[in-house]
Image 1: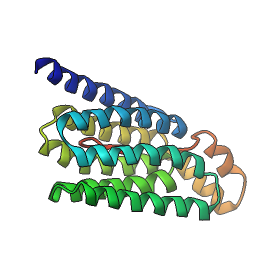
Image 2 (image 1 turned 180 degrees about the horizontal axis):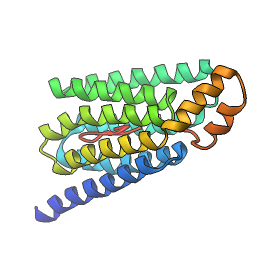
Image 3 (image 1 turned 45 degrees about the horizontal axis):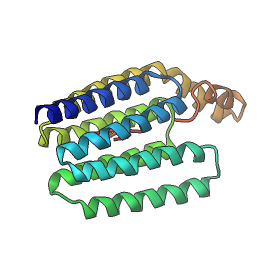
Image 4 (image 1 turned 90 degrees about the horizontal axis):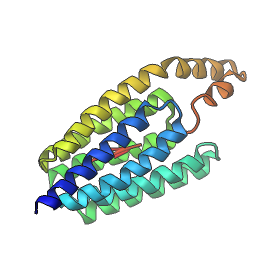
Length: 205
């Protein structure tokens, strides 16, 4: 019993560490890769805690994050269609594992993260992950997981810091797009392709 409890804590702490490292990185592609790894750890943590709805949504989140990385530079139609597919999957999984009002909060967090992963980059992506972390905190609190509550708190702090470090890049990108010049493309390469998390919450999670 004690060994199982220690394993639960270990998976939560490992996922927490990877989550924070991913958000401190300026490269959006690296953020995605690390978020997928953290998602695998959080899925295991959710299962061990008995948070099956959160575990299922985290599996969807991992697939969504991997897919979104390949569509950001693709056509708008393809991105929209895949986004809608993942929204449908998220709704179906949430309905199949519904567990009351807390499931509504995690569903909202999952939908928000899905949109962010497909349509946001840089500071905006990280701010959306901040909002998602605050929503996932409710689920973590319900299951009494201090690792996940700490993860959401630290993820929120890391998201704020990451957004702050990239604020100039986003502003320059917007200015470059408004001018129709090459500035946006050059700056986007500084923060390549871009969510969480959830924990029994998080990430983008």
